[in-house]
Length: 151
Image (cartoon, rainbow, N blue to C red; front, side):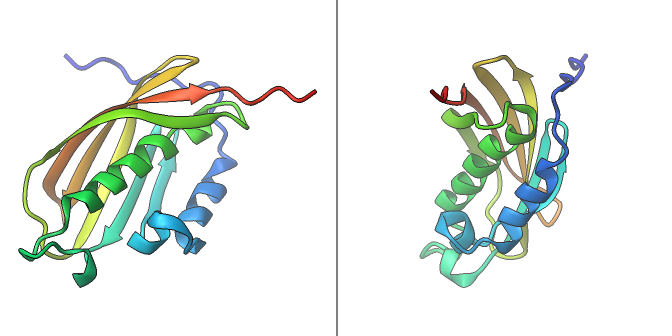
């Protein structure tokens, strides 16, 4: 029997616009280059997608595993920002990614779900699909760094 999902009493819905805006309007950094788009934000959940492009393929014609790993790493941390204290930082500590199927075209979607969260750490599960077909499964740990005290 699955465990009940955690509750997030400190969930800040004002992050919806910030997270969606960063994904849709930012061309900076690796997420911008790869073309990540945030498509859903909720308490303890975040969905992000990217369109497969020729320049993201490996020499064998499939999406480079590093692109999927970057997408996983991105949602692994971003899912926490609406549920942690403003000014805190979510830092990926580790994650394990199983690549389940080759991706050659279409849309790749990563759906992150917080499995467990304490004051200092969180465990997040990520399901990766390619046009609705399972393409990857990941789980990771994130360290939550509190805001710096101002003096």
